[in-house]
Image 1 (cartoon, rainbow, N blue to C red):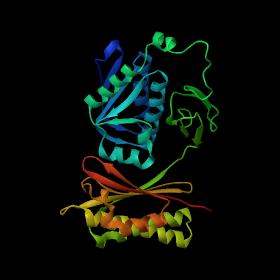
Image 2: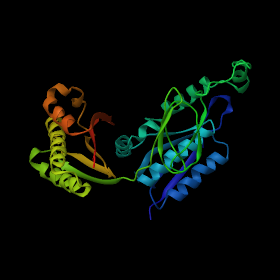
Image 3: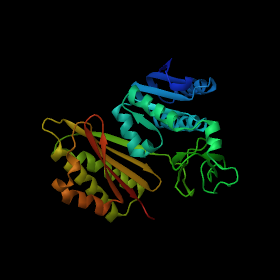
Image 4: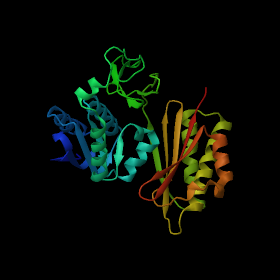
Length: 316
């Protein structure tokens, strides 16, 4: 059974605001999630407003652990605080980016930048008396002003939205986004199936990727023409990865995540540098990717890597 150690120490925040940095060591998986949730909830009950989780020694986080972290972030934010992650391992950052979760939780390179973000939040928040004085009592607030309440269409729970942005329902896991005008759009929760392979950085070894993608498209029942286009797009992404990686690069990774009719494919390396920023060198390959995929993104990965993230929805 895997173990997880949580070692807290207090943070020195202005105004005697209660803050804690908790160093995590071990794995956040099915066997440790109950202990992890108990420990983090304990900080909240003790009045901790700002919690920094040091993930430098976290060996592994599964999807259950990531979902719990998003849920706990929501809890801290509803208490006028926040939960931030620091020193997150590259593989975990990759998964956050693939699932689009980096918009829901703050990831910081270290304690100093995370504390600076907390201090900035505290300095920007007016004191209760100041906030009351700044609002003329005779003027009624606009219907679209924040905070506002939103009823989750998935679980019917009532949520409070504090500002424009992206959020996740702590009860059912559904995502929703609020715009500047107060309109809220919800996205039902998804359960992802993931397959990942590590591929030698040689064009001769693309058959491994092609076999994996053929299996994915067959299982999802993509029409033959769409399946061939999707496999070609992934082939082009792998070719770009191999051709632009520095000499001596031994391997790169290809991951496919599927949920219902949605498929995400990521081709990435942590050492390939910033070559993808100049798409002109591989313009034809990216044109092919975009012609077959619904969306193609180039995302940076620490410490010196890049990801080609492609999404495709099967329309039945």
